[in-house]
Image (cartoon, rainbow, N blue to C red; front, top):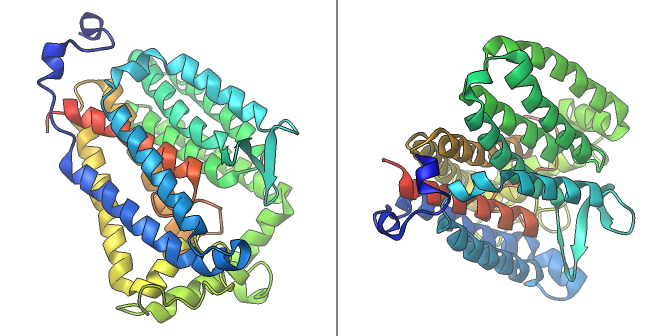
Length: 378
């Protein structure tokens, strides 16, 4: 059927496409609007102090959001089968970018990690491109090799080798949080494609040993684990961030202190507009505001899964599940960190946290998912 259609559908078939999923679209725009408002609220004090412009981060976030929305609508009109055709070149470009970022003079170092490549006044994060690129490639590979997916040597191992090469390059930056999201997303895709559970049990044991090795090999990761278990042991050092996050969430109560009324953003909570923006949101909008955002994310997850399962082919289903899985894992990890359930990982909250590459690439991913929804039999 795909060969008959080719990559681009005929005009007559394009006319019969569904409208993009409405609830999916509403959830995205709701999160974007709240995100821009909260970035301003969380960053205004810091931006005014550092740049003498309280709107500095908010203006940039709005620009990123508009750029991402334009890219989303553009990609939404590209038949998703196009990505199947260009899966190999896309993955190669992503690997080139991951290698380039490690080269001194090309990669930019921030916070001890060489994860960005400067482009004029802006910068891009190659690891974000790799997450989407690997989802596209793995969807293609698994759809083309369904008969081998239950085979350990022909289906499981080849997929894992590619995943861990990408993970290894990301860890050289190092960026454990992004690497974990990439690996978990790909493992979800392999599991959904039909891999044997026994293969995952063995992999889980190996992965646990490897994860412990990564933690032991870097002192700062051990400090994060220690701070997670007992942040009060070092309240002004390793435990400072999580303690300040909890200090923000606690006073929020049911209704919150009011939009713009956060106290923790006054140089108490580090990165209040970035990784810990949910803490500021909970402080200002309370339990009700935080619950509302979680419900919007659940709506996004539900519609994403429905669209993926209703896709007309295996490639579309795997591609959609990979995208919605990637976003959902980031949400779960970020919020778990903010409320103290897991150690600090440095993962942004999709659509809400400040960031160019992350927001733009996430919206591009949503563009693909919206295109799948135009073919889905909902």
